[in-house]
Image 1 (cartoon, rainbow, N blue to C red):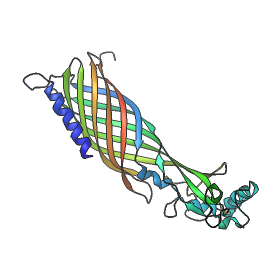
Image 2 (cartoon, rainbow, N blue to C red; image 1 turned 135 degrees about the vertical axis):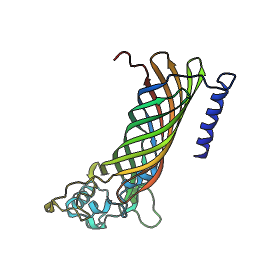
Image 3 (cartoon, rainbow, N blue to C red; image 1 turned 60 degrees about the horizontal axis):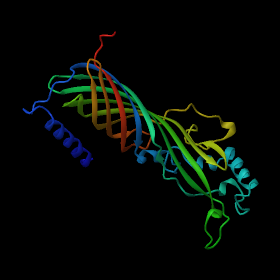
Length: 294
């Protein structure tokens, strides 16, 4: 974080050096602007481990693996395909020997916002972003086919794990814009962020079949005849801070096109798994400052 702050500070200093000789920034468009942005997101893997299926999490592999409803089906499939030995006599003896280390895939965000600029170069912005995130990983299920010092794939079955969530982020920031001349401008934003996370999926894949491990059983073992509870979102409201740096090109009388980087440090409020993490976004933003066409 310190390196990022220093880099953005250097951008401000270098931008000021390119202002007029008297050191006063040249004024750019003032007043209200609207903008739309889209880009790529790299989210912190700390929060992704909510979907790892570990025993301490709300959604666990063993709840499904050791249930009569699903465990019997999994055990039969593995036996029929010769993936587990006869030493595993029932689904209750299936064991996870290595849990997944989950991480978020590179994803995307889209957003809309408002900003207001003053002649001094300072201003503020309000931005609404939507993120779709997928966490992936893999775990090892014991096959009991290896003995002694034997190693390799015969000792385990590699299984996939996936989690999916939607996040809405609301960012409010103070901005500073420096005109660099020739239509170029430099912008730095610093502010606070609120996010709302909705957990959509938590799936495991075993031998080509997919099973949901989302806890719709209120912590009890899944049973075909027992029914289920209404699913309650396992996400919630989180808070954080962020910093952005943008380089833009102004189109006289219209607005600007900007490319930039945003770093969030925020809490993703996942049930019984509150964790702070970093996320990084590369965005392109289209601003409209002239509303005479309306």
